[in-house]
Amino acid sequence: MTVSSGDKSTFDPQSTFSCSHEPLLPRPDSSCRNRMDKDTEEHGPVPIHWDATPEDHGHIPIIDFSSYSLLKGAVDEDELQPLATQLVQAFSTVGFVYLRNHGIPAALVSRTFEAADKFFALPEEVKTKFSRPADKSHGWVCLERERVTMERPGDLKEAFNVRPPQATEKLWPSEEVPEFQQASLQLYDKCRQLSLRIIELMARGLNIQNMQALLSMHSLMGTGPNGSLMRPLRYPPVPDHVKDRQIRCGEHTDYGSITLLFQDNIAGLEVQNCEGEYVPAPPIPNTVVVNIGDIMQRWTADKLKSTSHRVLLPETEEGRKSARRSIAFFAHPNLDAVITCLDGSNKYPPITAGEYLKQRLTATYDVS
Ligand SMILES: O=C(O)CCC(=O)C(=O)O
Picture 1 (cartoon, rainbow, N blue to C red):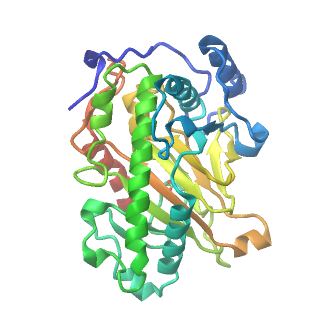
Picture 2 (cartoon, rainbow, N blue to C red):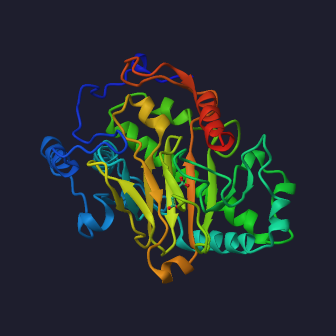
Picture 3 (spheres, protein in one colour):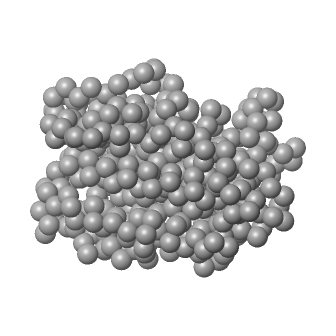
C-alpha cells in the first residue's frame, strides 16, 4: 500500500525552510526562530508556548496537546487544525517538540521505569537469559552492544526492547520482575495510540487529503508485521575507564516515523539546532519529547526533519555517579508499506519500510 501524490497529497513541496538538516554543517545565516516567526505570520497566530527561554530547551517548542489528549472524550475538530499547524511548523524546522497534556498517565510511565530498574539491577548472567536473539528485536541489549555512530565506540547504555508480536513468554523476566511485562505492554499501547494521533495531525498539517491511508500504513503497530519498538534505556554511572570518544548515546537520527521519549530527571539529551550545534533538551516534567524519524523525512521529501541527537557523559563528578533513564517509543510504518515521496517527486526511490529498517539495523548492530 502506498500514499503518494496520486492519493492527492497537496502539501507544497516547494516550500523552503531555512533550517538545514545536514548534520554538523553550520548555517550561520539561518535561523529556526526566524522561520517559525515567518510561518506564524503566514498561517496566522499560532500560540507556540515557550515555558522557558529557548536556550533552556534548544529551540524546541512546548506544545499543549490537550485538544487531542488520549484522555479527551469528545474531540473538537476546530481545535485540531491549529494544533496540526504547530506540530508541522516545529517538525519542519527543529524536528523536535515537547508535548504536554498528552494523556499518557504519569503513574504508568513511573511504573514502567521502576520495573525496568529492577530488571537492569539483575545480575548479568540473569539478564543474559533475556538477550535479544539475533533474528528478533525483542529482548535485552547489553552495555556497549549498540554503536549508533561509526565515529565512536559502543554506547554506554543498556536497553530492553519491547516488540509485542515477537515477545515469547521466554523473553520476559516473568519470575524475576513479574510486573515488567504488564507495565511495558500497557505503556506500549498508550504510546501507539498517541503516535497515531500525532501522525494524523501531521497529515492534517501537511494537508494530505488521504489521511486515512497514512494512518492505515501504521495499523499493525504492536500486533503484526510492523517494526514499532519501545525500549526502556539505562545509562549506568560513568565507569572509571571510558574509551576514547565514548559517550552515553552517539550522534544519530532515528529510523522510523516518529519517536516518543520519556526522560527521568537526569539531563544529557542534546539536539542539533539549525546552526549545527548540539544544544540541551533537558527533562521537563510531565512532557513527552517527540521527534521525526528518517523514514518520515524521506516520505515527506525532506519537508519534515529528522534531527540528529545524542546523550553526552555528564561533566560533574556528581552527575557521573548518577544513572540516567529514559523510555523511547519508535513508531514505524507496517513492514510492507511502500514509502513513496508524498509530494509526488522521486527525490527518494520507493522502498518498503521493512527493507529500510533492515538496512538501518544491520548498520547499527553488525558493523564493528
Ligand atoms: O535517552 C535519551 O534521552 C535518548 C535516546 C535516544 O536517542 C535513542 O534511543 O534513540
